[in-house]
Length: 162
Image 1 (cartoon, rainbow, N blue to C red):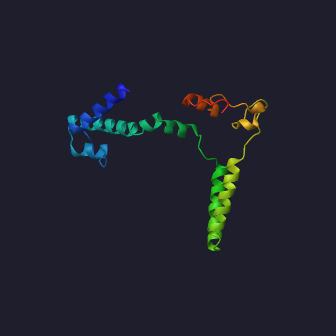
Image 2: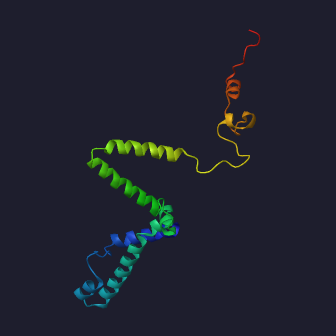
């Protein structure tokens, strides 16, 4: 990280000293303006700095989580999901032309709720449900706050024989 910071400061200092090249200038135009060796060396140095700065411009993306995600090719949506969304948009447009856009949207919304709330797989044997009433002996999950525990922590005690 310190190395990148030092490179950034060096590039910024070079730009402030007048060493930056306009992006529209090419090394050939810089060389054709002057003919001296000093200008040629300065032009080559500026060309190297320009190419380095353009490559450094995207280093932050490759180092970020987004860049690693893009490089790995793991996208949030598969091609099939994208095709389904495109089909839904086409059907929505068709039903909107037929003045049934709102009913189509509402029915598809209920369908998405139904699909989203369905469990993708059955529970494994011995796996507890989040709802204790479905577990054997109404056994709650570890860390679940029960009414009895809450009453005890708040200091409420049931009055005996009242």
